[in-house]
Every structure is written in C-alpha cells, then in structure tokens.
Image (cartoon, rainbow, N blue to C red; front, side, top):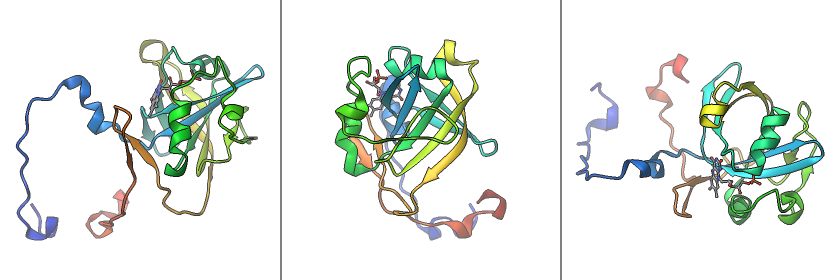
Length: 195
Ligand SMILES: Cc1cc2nc3c(=O)[nH]c(=O)nc-3n(C[C@H](O)[C@H](O)[C@H](O)COP(=O)(O)O)c2cc1C
C-alpha cells in the first residue's frame, strides 16, 4: 500500500461470522432515504424509498426499485415521471408514516401536512419540507416488468443552499435509521479526475 494510507497505522481486522444473505441489505442500503412524489390523472401520492442508486453523471441517471404493490407504482408507471425529494432527520416521523400508509386510502400531502409545490418539467409535485427535490423523467423502462426497477433521468434539481450538508437519514431495517454524521475530507488522496 502506498504511503499516506491510514498514516501507517495498523489496520484493524474483523473476526466475521456467518450472516443470513437476505439480511445484507441492513449494511448495504446506502440511503439516504428519499420521498418519491408522483401524480397522474388528478391523483397524487408520496412513498418512502431506500432502494435507489446513481447510474451515470451525465445524463444524470438514477435507478430505483418501487414495489408493484405500492399505490405509487401505478402513478409513476403511467405518468413516467416522479420527483425524488430528500428529507432530513427533523421529519423522520413523517418519513416513517409515509412509508407505512397507502395513498390508495389517504392523500398523504394533506394527511402529513406537507406542501406540494409545482415542478418545472414534470407534473409530480415537489415537497417544500424537503431539503432537495429532483425532477425525474423515465429514461428506461426495460427493467420495470422484471425487477420493478425504474431508470430515471434527473431533468431539474432544486437544492436548498443551507444547510450545505443536510442531515439525512439512512435506513438499517427493523425500524432503525442512521443519521448522517460528521464529514471528513480525503481530497489530498484523490486523482483530480476522480473528484
Ligand atoms: C424506510 C423505508 C424505506 C422504504 N423503501 C422502499 C423502497 O425502496 N421501495 C419500495 O417499493 N418501497 C419502500 N418502502 C415502502 C413504501 O414506502 C410503502 O410501501 C408505502 O406505504 C408505499 O406507499 P404508496 O402505497 O402510497 O405508494 C419503504 C418504507 C420505509 C419505511
């Protein structure tokens, strides 16, 4: 290993045990937890989502898994649009509530006292109480039938300048969340093209 890595300190080795493969998500779900807002034919909904990932810088592509049992699934599939909103820890109870109720029964904006704001490029609303909101158009639906996997292009991003680093929540399963913590920088170890 090159000099500089961990400043020459002996690195701790972990003694590992067998672990159920279906539970590895408890370590790998990266979060941050997001709220997906959608709208179609005069109906709107919000769902809580942890299963998402970045696919490409430009065009800005994201993938996410939306269960076909969710009310949001049909709104998103039919409209081919959504907004991915980033909530912070101060509204974590609302985040949990949205993820444990169905838009088939309630209007979640009204029920949870959230403010729907007009987006610029999509009909799905932005959530004013979230730190950031990313307007998305469906880029590729080829994996929807097989994996409920939607591949989105972010066509517009709305981000609050403060706080610069929002205190996001990251799901660990079993009703437990991690809260984003302290930041550290290792810029000096990065190649310029990797930043
Ligand atoms: C922390 C958390 C993370 C979740 N992540 C996902 C997810 O990634 N994909 C998914 O389909 N459902 C996920 N859910 C479940 C949906 O949010 C939940 O089924 C919700 O009630 C769907 O709402 P809807 O029926 O109004 O669309 C999650 C729920 C919670 C609480």
